[in-house]
Length: 226
Image (cartoon, rainbow, N blue to C red):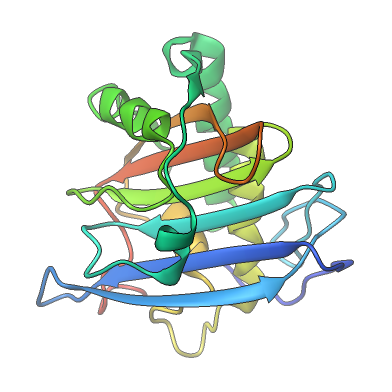
């Protein structure tokens, strides 16, 4: 992974809601936790020595899970399903390349090999995004979720959001943390492929952009963080 030492942010009252889960090395049962903070970063550049990012004045939420959740969180019950207006961005070469570029540039900074596009994961990923339910799908893959309103979201914005967690990772105790689970999934070395999809939903208000990324093999196994 990395030796990120600091992060530079400007904060306001815009909320960021994050849930993370991981898999124990001896069991498929996930450990789950939820944290809520008030953060709206305003500058962007992910580097091994510092992290920051650029976003507009939007409400963002994100979540990560490599497996079927053990149970629902308050976040999932407070964000009901809504009718989507979907796109087929994932079927275009430019979207595929943007997905790979955003992940692989981040992974390269932490010594992880480039990911390839997983065409087998993509149809289910787009279907889950189209459902417009902000909760984890469950399955034998890693899964990062992110949403933004009142405008859409890009894969780059989602990866930037997840990578801001790098500065909070405790390298002297390399294990699971509820505040860094998205970051560790993005840069997990044994993960080799990814598929992402975006849909337009309404659970944060009209124009909510909903990003779903799935990873194979999944990361965040206890006992493998080092």
